Image (cartoon, rainbow, N blue to C red; front, side):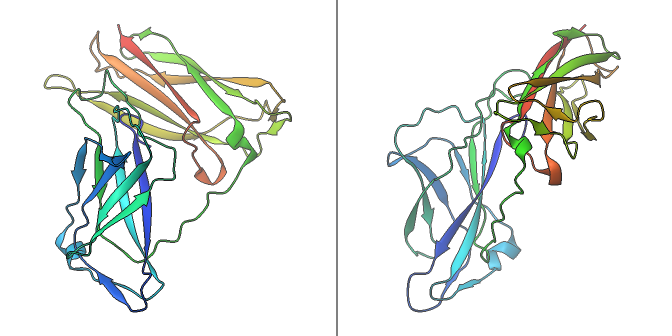
Amino acid sequence: MDAAIGKLIGQVDVRNTSKVECTLQGEVPVTMLAGGREIPMLYAHGINEEARARVVAVPAGGRASLRLDWSGPFCQPTDGTLELAIEVPHGGGTLRAPISADDRPGCQRGEGINPTARATLYASGFTEPVAVSTPPSSPLDQLTVTVAGPSTAAAGSRLAFRVTLGNPTGGPLALDPCPGYLMERFSLGDATNDAVNTSQLYRLSCRPLTQIPAGGAAVFEMVAEVPASMRAGRELTVTWKLYLPHYVQRGSQFGAFTLTVS
Protein backbone atom coordinates (compact mmCIF):
# COMPACT_ATOMS: atom_id res chain seq x y z
CA MET A 1 0.00 0.00 0.00
CA ASP A 2 1.26 3.44 -0.95
CA ALA A 3 1.85 5.59 2.13
CA ALA A 4 0.47 8.76 0.57
CA ILE A 5 -2.78 7.83 -1.19
CA GLY A 6 -3.28 4.14 -0.49
CA LYS A 7 -3.14 1.50 -3.22
CA LEU A 8 -4.37 -2.08 -3.36
CA ILE A 9 -3.52 -4.73 -5.93
CA GLY A 10 -6.05 -7.48 -6.52
CA GLN A 11 -6.42 -10.53 -8.71
CA VAL A 12 -9.61 -11.84 -10.33
CA ASP A 13 -9.78 -15.45 -11.46
CA VAL A 14 -12.31 -16.44 -14.13
CA ARG A 15 -13.09 -20.04 -15.04
CA ASN A 16 -14.26 -21.55 -18.31
CA THR A 17 -17.34 -23.56 -17.34
CA SER A 18 -18.04 -24.73 -20.89
CA LYS A 19 -16.92 -28.00 -22.44
CA VAL A 20 -14.81 -26.35 -25.16
CA GLU A 21 -11.75 -24.12 -25.18
CA CYS A 22 -12.27 -20.36 -25.38
CA THR A 23 -9.92 -17.43 -25.95
CA LEU A 24 -9.60 -14.00 -24.35
CA GLN A 25 -8.02 -10.98 -26.04
CA GLY A 26 -8.08 -7.21 -25.62
CA GLU A 27 -9.07 -4.57 -23.10
CA VAL A 28 -11.27 -5.44 -20.16
CA PRO A 29 -13.48 -2.58 -18.88
CA VAL A 30 -14.23 -3.10 -15.19
CA THR A 31 -16.44 -1.10 -12.82
CA MET A 32 -17.14 -1.52 -9.12
CA LEU A 33 -20.66 -1.76 -7.74
CA ALA A 34 -22.07 -1.27 -4.26
CA GLY A 35 -25.53 -2.70 -3.76
CA GLY A 36 -25.84 -3.02 -7.54
CA ARG A 37 -24.98 0.64 -8.23
CA GLU A 38 -21.76 1.83 -9.83
CA ILE A 39 -19.41 3.62 -7.42
CA PRO A 40 -18.41 7.04 -8.79
CA MET A 41 -14.63 7.06 -9.34
CA LEU A 42 -12.19 6.98 -12.23
CA TYR A 43 -12.06 3.77 -14.30
CA ALA A 44 -9.21 2.91 -16.67
CA HIS A 45 -8.45 -0.16 -18.77
CA GLY A 46 -5.97 1.00 -21.42
CA ILE A 47 -3.22 -1.52 -22.23
CA ASN A 48 -0.28 -1.40 -24.63
CA GLU A 49 -0.21 -2.98 -28.08
CA GLU A 50 1.62 -6.10 -26.91
CA ALA A 51 -0.99 -6.77 -24.23
CA ARG A 52 -3.82 -5.94 -26.63
CA ALA A 53 -2.53 -8.50 -29.14
CA ARG A 54 -2.04 -11.27 -26.55
CA VAL A 55 -4.44 -14.19 -26.93
CA VAL A 56 -5.04 -16.23 -23.79
CA ALA A 57 -6.36 -19.74 -24.44
CA VAL A 58 -8.56 -21.06 -21.64
CA PRO A 59 -9.29 -24.80 -21.88
CA ALA A 60 -12.55 -26.31 -20.67
CA GLY A 61 -12.49 -26.04 -16.88
CA GLY A 62 -9.40 -23.83 -17.04
CA ARG A 63 -8.80 -20.36 -15.59
CA ALA A 64 -7.46 -16.94 -16.55
CA SER A 65 -6.40 -14.03 -14.34
CA LEU A 66 -7.05 -10.30 -14.39
CA ARG A 67 -5.03 -7.82 -12.33
CA LEU A 68 -6.74 -4.78 -10.78
CA ASP A 69 -5.06 -1.73 -9.20
CA TRP A 70 -7.29 0.28 -6.86
CA SER A 71 -5.81 3.55 -5.63
CA GLY A 72 -7.13 6.19 -3.24
CA PRO A 73 -8.10 8.49 -1.81
CA PHE A 74 -11.31 6.46 -1.50
CA CYS A 75 -13.73 8.55 0.57
CA GLN A 76 -17.14 7.51 -0.77
CA PRO A 77 -19.52 5.79 1.66
CA THR A 78 -20.71 2.45 0.29
CA ASP A 79 -24.01 0.75 0.95
CA GLY A 80 -24.40 -2.91 0.12
CA THR A 81 -22.16 -5.70 -1.08
CA LEU A 82 -19.19 -4.71 -3.24
CA GLU A 83 -18.74 -6.51 -6.54
CA LEU A 84 -17.04 -6.06 -9.88
CA ALA A 85 -18.71 -5.83 -13.28
CA ILE A 86 -16.21 -7.27 -15.78
CA GLU A 87 -16.88 -6.86 -19.50
CA VAL A 88 -15.50 -9.83 -21.41
CA PRO A 89 -13.77 -8.65 -24.64
CA HIS A 90 -15.40 -8.95 -28.07
CA GLY A 91 -18.96 -8.97 -26.80
CA GLY A 92 -18.51 -11.88 -24.41
CA GLY A 93 -20.95 -10.45 -21.90
CA THR A 94 -20.55 -9.09 -18.39
CA LEU A 95 -19.37 -11.12 -15.41
CA ARG A 96 -20.20 -10.23 -11.81
CA ALA A 97 -17.53 -11.01 -9.22
CA PRO A 98 -18.03 -10.40 -5.49
CA ILE A 99 -15.18 -8.68 -3.64
CA SER A 100 -14.22 -10.91 -0.74
CA ALA A 101 -11.42 -8.78 0.75
CA ASP A 102 -12.21 -6.20 3.42
CA ASP A 103 -9.29 -3.85 2.61
CA ARG A 104 -10.01 -0.41 1.14
CA PRO A 105 -7.69 2.39 0.00
CA GLY A 106 -7.53 5.11 2.64
CA CYS A 107 -9.24 8.50 2.53
CA GLN A 108 -6.11 10.56 3.12
CA ARG A 109 -6.37 14.32 2.83
CA GLY A 110 -4.11 17.26 3.65
CA GLU A 111 -0.42 17.99 3.11
CA GLY A 112 1.12 15.89 0.37
CA ILE A 113 -2.21 14.85 -1.16
CA ASN A 114 -3.53 16.49 -4.32
CA PRO A 115 -6.93 17.94 -3.29
CA THR A 116 -8.40 16.99 -6.69
CA ALA A 117 -7.20 13.36 -6.51
CA ARG A 118 -9.92 10.72 -6.95
CA ALA A 119 -10.00 7.01 -6.42
CA THR A 120 -9.10 5.01 -9.54
CA LEU A 121 -9.72 1.40 -10.54
CA TYR A 122 -7.37 0.24 -13.29
CA ALA A 123 -7.86 -3.09 -15.09
CA SER A 124 -5.15 -4.86 -17.08
CA GLY A 125 -5.78 -7.50 -19.76
CA PHE A 126 -6.36 -11.21 -19.12
CA THR A 127 -3.28 -13.37 -18.61
CA GLU A 128 -2.47 -16.99 -17.86
CA PRO A 129 -3.68 -17.96 -14.36
CA VAL A 130 -1.54 -16.50 -11.59
CA ALA A 131 -0.53 -18.75 -8.73
CA VAL A 132 -1.37 -16.95 -5.49
CA SER A 133 1.17 -17.59 -2.76
CA THR A 134 0.53 -17.15 0.94
CA PRO A 135 3.08 -14.91 2.68
CA PRO A 136 5.17 -16.75 5.29
CA SER A 137 3.53 -16.50 8.67
CA SER A 138 5.34 -15.03 11.66
CA PRO A 139 4.32 -14.62 15.32
CA LEU A 140 5.47 -11.01 14.96
CA ASP A 141 2.49 -10.22 12.73
CA GLN A 142 0.59 -9.72 15.98
CA LEU A 143 2.73 -6.75 17.04
CA THR A 144 1.09 -3.33 17.10
CA VAL A 145 2.97 -0.22 15.94
CA THR A 146 2.64 3.29 17.38
CA VAL A 147 4.76 6.22 16.18
CA ALA A 148 5.16 9.55 17.99
CA GLY A 149 7.32 12.47 16.86
CA PRO A 150 7.76 16.21 17.33
CA SER A 151 5.40 18.76 15.81
CA THR A 152 8.24 21.03 14.61
CA ALA A 153 11.89 20.68 13.62
CA ALA A 154 14.50 22.90 12.03
CA ALA A 155 15.69 22.44 8.46
CA GLY A 156 18.90 20.43 8.37
CA SER A 157 18.40 19.05 11.88
CA ARG A 158 18.30 15.46 13.08
CA LEU A 159 15.05 14.79 14.90
CA ALA A 160 14.34 11.96 17.31
CA PHE A 161 11.04 10.10 17.40
CA ARG A 162 9.77 6.99 19.13
CA VAL A 163 8.31 3.75 17.83
CA THR A 164 6.42 1.54 20.28
CA LEU A 165 5.93 -2.13 19.45
CA GLY A 166 3.12 -3.60 21.53
CA ASN A 167 2.43 -7.24 22.27
CA PRO A 168 -1.32 -7.71 22.88
CA THR A 169 -1.03 -11.51 23.10
CA GLY A 170 -0.93 -13.75 26.16
CA GLY A 171 2.62 -14.95 25.55
CA PRO A 172 6.04 -13.43 24.83
CA LEU A 173 7.03 -12.64 21.24
CA ALA A 174 10.68 -13.37 20.44
CA LEU A 175 12.48 -10.86 18.23
CA ASP A 176 14.44 -13.58 16.48
CA PRO A 177 15.37 -12.86 13.82
CA CYS A 178 15.21 -9.11 14.27
CA PRO A 179 12.56 -7.62 11.96
CA GLY A 180 13.31 -4.83 9.52
CA TYR A 181 11.67 -1.47 9.11
CA LEU A 182 11.23 1.01 6.30
CA MET A 183 11.52 4.73 7.03
CA GLU A 184 10.03 7.15 4.51
CA ARG A 185 10.10 10.95 4.27
CA PHE A 186 7.61 12.83 2.12
CA SER A 187 6.84 16.47 1.35
CA LEU A 188 4.92 17.75 -1.64
CA GLY A 189 6.93 20.01 -3.97
CA ASP A 190 5.83 22.96 -6.07
CA ALA A 191 7.27 25.50 -8.49
CA THR A 192 9.69 26.87 -5.90
CA ASN A 193 10.27 23.88 -3.61
CA ASP A 194 11.73 20.48 -4.42
CA ALA A 195 9.66 17.50 -3.36
CA VAL A 196 10.95 15.13 -0.71
CA ASN A 197 10.29 11.45 -1.35
CA THR A 198 12.84 9.07 0.17
CA SER A 199 12.75 5.61 1.71
CA GLN A 200 15.37 3.41 3.34
CA LEU A 201 15.17 -0.15 4.69
CA TYR A 202 16.91 -0.95 8.01
CA ARG A 203 17.12 -3.80 10.50
CA LEU A 204 15.82 -3.20 14.02
CA SER A 205 18.45 -3.36 16.78
CA CYS A 206 17.26 -6.27 18.92
CA ARG A 207 20.48 -7.15 20.78
CA PRO A 208 19.45 -5.39 24.03
CA LEU A 209 15.92 -6.87 23.80
CA THR A 210 15.36 -10.44 22.70
CA GLN A 211 11.60 -10.57 23.26
CA ILE A 212 8.54 -8.48 24.12
CA PRO A 213 6.64 -9.90 27.13
CA ALA A 214 2.96 -10.78 27.07
CA GLY A 215 0.85 -7.64 27.24
CA GLY A 216 4.00 -5.52 27.20
CA ALA A 217 5.64 -3.08 24.84
CA ALA A 218 9.09 -2.03 23.69
CA VAL A 219 10.03 1.53 22.78
CA PHE A 220 12.69 2.19 20.14
CA GLU A 221 14.19 5.61 19.55
CA MET A 222 14.62 6.54 15.90
CA VAL A 223 16.39 9.40 14.13
CA ALA A 224 15.42 11.13 10.88
CA GLU A 225 16.98 14.09 9.14
CA VAL A 226 15.04 17.12 7.97
CA PRO A 227 16.42 18.12 4.55
CA ALA A 228 18.38 21.34 4.78
CA SER A 229 16.70 22.59 1.59
CA MET A 230 13.25 22.72 3.19
CA ARG A 231 11.92 26.20 3.89
CA ALA A 232 10.23 27.21 7.12
CA GLY A 233 6.50 26.51 7.14
CA ARG A 234 6.62 23.42 4.93
CA GLU A 235 5.34 20.10 6.23
CA LEU A 236 7.31 16.85 6.30
CA THR A 237 5.70 13.45 6.89
CA VAL A 238 7.80 10.63 8.36
CA THR A 239 6.39 7.11 7.98
CA TRP A 240 7.72 4.02 9.79
CA LYS A 241 6.73 0.54 8.57
CA LEU A 242 7.57 -2.80 10.18
CA TYR A 243 8.98 -5.50 7.91
CA LEU A 244 8.73 -9.07 9.18
CA PRO A 245 11.16 -11.88 8.22
CA HIS A 246 11.18 -12.65 4.48
CA TYR A 247 10.30 -8.96 3.87
CA VAL A 248 6.63 -9.54 4.63
CA GLN A 249 4.73 -6.34 5.38
CA ARG A 250 1.31 -6.28 7.05
CA GLY A 251 -1.09 -3.51 6.15
CA SER A 252 -1.61 -2.34 9.74
CA GLN A 253 1.94 -2.40 11.10
CA PHE A 254 2.99 1.17 10.40
CA GLY A 255 2.70 4.67 11.82
CA ALA A 256 3.42 8.23 10.72
CA PHE A 257 3.63 11.78 12.00
CA THR A 258 3.76 15.17 10.26
CA LEU A 259 5.87 18.10 11.43
CA THR A 260 6.23 21.72 10.38
CA VAL A 261 9.70 22.90 9.42
CA SER A 262 10.84 25.86 11.51
